[in-house]
Length: 313
Image 1 (cartoon, one colour):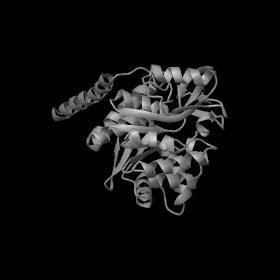
Image 2: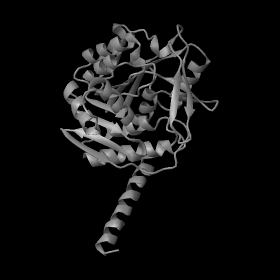
Image 3: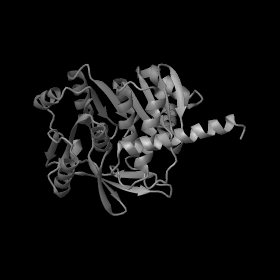
Image 4: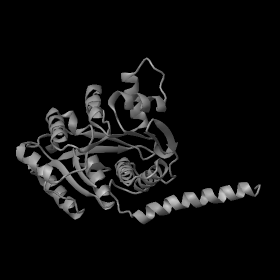
């Protein structure tokens, strides 16, 4: 696949240590590791953290021709707080460099040369109106490109009309179960909530092909072709959850592009997300072989359980 990933690049400050992150960057790193061609459209400041970010992006093998260096705002940062379970909350400083991109016809033409099959985007960067305008322009100019909306709601950086506009662009939407209930209650407050009802209602309202709802250690739910199914997760010792959802998102798109069954897509994405959650940082070292080993481990256990039941044990 050829993917144009758009949005924030920032430094996650976790327990006083700096980790390069932002969902679009994390997604891009994992997608590229899965063999895709990824271009990242974002901005960093003309400052020490911006230079450090560019050097690390190059070290990660990411293409940086669409990464702008801007003087109007500093490189993005987020103060990350982890609770006892490893779940993260974010305090994000705005405006940041990714908010003040110079968008002109030359940039659009550059993006066209990348011939993307997919545009990846989230909510945070698009809460800044010029970024959303740029996104709509890109989608219009890059047809028949498909759109992957990875919601990633951050308090103070979203509103329901914005989510609705972004959902209307999307071929695929990924969000978590807390986000699903929150936006369902805001839009369909008179209806009783279930996860399946959310998926069905949101898909019908915005013409979305696939909706994926992550459920933490419980796994995920997929709504595809009017069919709703849930798939179990993989138990791991969670170190921190930063980047786990972004890796999951990359695994989901990877399986979808290869035409895998919903079961296989969910197993791979769940395993990849779990593996990242078991390691420090948003883009830790990992291998596809480790991911398949986790999947095989569950299948072997399942096979042994079936055999034991067959033997009356």
